[in-house]
Image 1 (cartoon, rainbow, N blue to C red):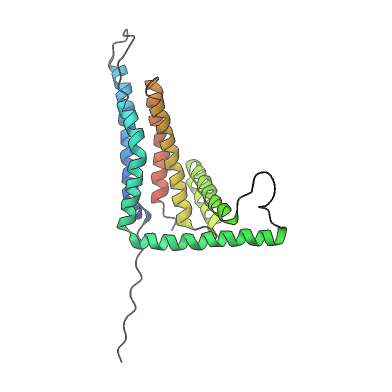
Image 2 (tube, helix red, strand yellow):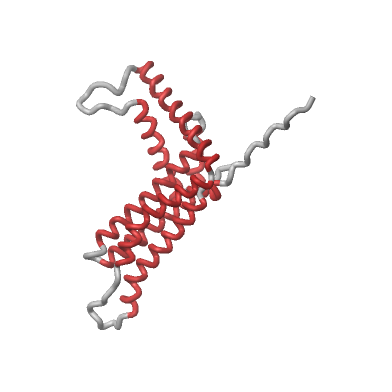
Length: 223
């Protein structure tokens, strides 16, 4: 009698490998932000002290604002294509945690009465509340990570201890929150570019800490 050996359990990639294209895109975007700000500041620095008007270029501020969202979206798609097994695992895990959050909300209503009916503004359904809970968790972790990564790690473990949220999905949501904050700063820079070049440059630089935080969260492995 012959037996077929069990297939080896696939080794999961480190998060910095799983999100390698996204991390590279964020790093590229950080460099583009610094370059765009430099195109404003460098001519001012090179002008003679007595010169009143200095011609500067803000085209790069506009360009980085427009290209940033497209660059990050493309990187996410490329990462997904590189790791289809991880995408399938993440989707299955997200379905489990989402169902667990919905079940918890329904159980709460069964004990305390329905809290989503009545009133001029309908309250979130169980499904909507489950999605909002993940977004809130990601925002809290991103904010905490900026101040104290060790405390942020403790918060992730606390949020995921009951099984209604997964470590990877919380960290991914936190990374998205940070990246979106950076993109919003770049959108403001684009608006300012036509009337206030210095403000546009400052906003490009203000986006950098958010993008760097997204890199840290996308590459963080708690184990």
